[in-house]
Length: 159
Ligand SMILES: Nc1ncnc2c1ncn2[C@@H]1O[C@H](COP(=O)(O)OP(=O)(O)O)[C@@H](O)[C@H]1O
Ligand SMILES: [Mg+2]
Image 1 (cartoon, rainbow, N blue to C red):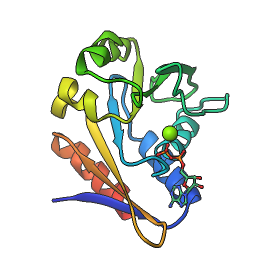
Image 2 (cartoon, rainbow, N blue to C red):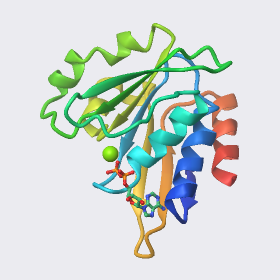
Image 3 (cartoon, rainbow, N blue to C red):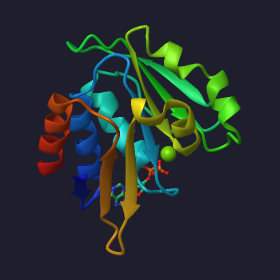
């Protein structure tokens, strides 16, 4: 079964991120894929809002990974926002040690997460952004989830 949510404008994509952010748990790694301008950063801004990040979230293209302090009741203290656009090999992704970073009550949201999926595999939550001719986006969620999670994400898709 595909878990997918279609967003007709950028506000709705941000809202999709916000709703998704509320479902996250410490240790989660979310990989975002889709072409330039697909809405990956827009979605991440929504996740950040849900997690109670106070500062502005922008594309971390030159820094690779940016850390944002969070304020929420989910026990998530840090949002690691990555951008792998300039990364050429899975080895470089491994060097970022995201798997270890999220163990300290963090979550990671990674734009251009294709290479990272080689490392994290189904342990990660993958969200693919498809852009339609009318500019709407369809966000489809992939990964190996337990039944509770699958239900939560299915509910998220219906909103
Ligand atoms: N449904 C939509 N969802 C997200 N962005 C949209 C949508 N429709 C138009 N846009 C526009 O597309 C751009 C998305 O940019 P951004 O989130 O930075 O993409 P990415 O990080 O994937 O490169 C924004 O300028 C936004 O206003
Ligand atoms: Mg971006």
